[in-house]
Structures are given as structure tokens and as C-alpha cells.
Length: 194
Image (cartoon, rainbow, N blue to C red):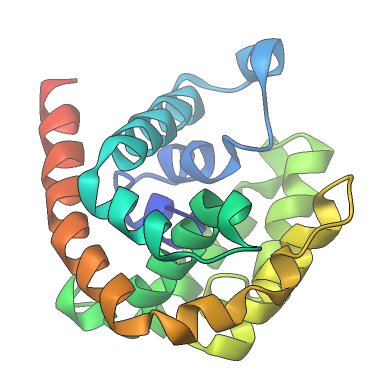
């Protein structure tokens, strides 16, 4: 799952949400500087990723990705699944997507002064460029993949992989809707027992 799903699956708490979304940016000992709430978000991010990586519907989606994009299948499926969450948002949330995203950005902005500069700048870019809203369109998915491609050190084809979503749209969507309710239940169960 990518940022939209990680935020959606977070507790209704800004620190938990921030930790869940920045977990890929902050590694190792650097995590110790953050509050317990943000560190709880780091743990939630890992819980979601471990469950996602082991799920058969996700494996089926990864198998749909064709060469030469197969090596990026895990990343592509994460982004494509956020697309399906965005375009069928009302199936999972009774708050309209745009209102929900606006609230997330406002929560982040109210918390920026408590964050290290690199994290703050990343969250500001997310809001300014509306990374969460980009999941709703194929053009937005292409922009996301191109941005991710530029962050990789080696030349890659990630920015050219959007046609994989179009080609396998129905199957990927079915896989997502099989998987996501099970992920939601898994996360709720883990949060209840924490």
C-alpha cells in the first residue's frame, strides 16, 4: 500500500498518521528522535506492509505485471491499489475524499513546527503538490511513478509503467477489493489488541 492507504488505515491521530506516512523516509536510529505516537505509526506502517506482502491477492496482482516492469511489481501494485482506493473511496469511507485529504494536509500543517526539517519539507511537498489527490487519475498515477523513478539511483522504467494499470485494470481492481477489506480487519484487530 502507498501513502493514501497508510493514512486511511491510521488511527484518527495526527502523530500516528505522520508516523505511518513517513516510515519509509526515516530509518534505523533516526526513529528514536520521534514521539511515541509517531513511532506507533512506524509500527503500523510495518504491520500493513508485512500483511500486504504476504497476501495471495497481492501476489496475484504482482503476477499480472508484465516485463520489463516485473521487477517493479511490488511498487506498482502499491501505487495502483491506492488508485483503486481513491476512485472507489465512498465504498470505504463516508467522508468525501477531497474533504478527507484537505483535513489530512491541515493536520500536517498544524504539526510541522514539531518535525525535523527533512520530514517537514516532505510533508509540505505532499500537500503543495497534492500527492494524495493524484491517485484519482491515470495522469496522477503517471506523475507519481515518474516522481518515484527520479528518486532511484539507477536508470529505470518505473515512470513508464502506467499502461500496466490500464492493461490489467479489471483484474487489479478485483484483487484490490478482495484484499483491502481483509487488510482493514487485520489492522483493526491489531489496533484493538495494542
